[in-house]
Image (cartoon, rainbow, N blue to C red; front, side):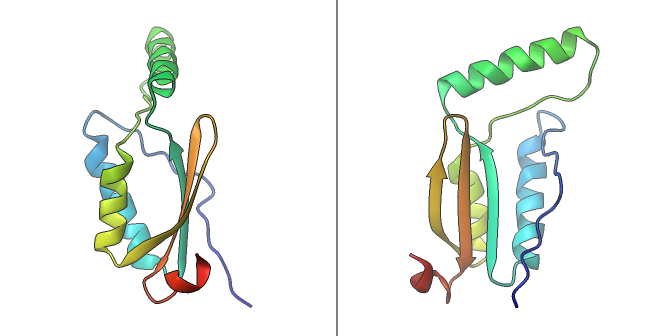
Length: 111
């Protein structure tokens, strides 16, 4: 039986330099991936950015330090591909994207 481990919750939005933080998280996740890595992230669309900006404005008004960011999917994909993973599938919803990556030798069987 194969086991798929998924972090219960990961917060990637720490500061304006969070792109480096996200890249470091993806490198660490890829290093621990034996076969399949799945992750979701907000779509890089104007309406999602607007939603996040309004949410961040509310967080600032209420004194919270947390901020949410929309990261470029191309950069995240490049990090995972550099680690030897190949995207097997992508599913888009209105706000979120789900990407499924496999080790290179497995990618042909899952497409």
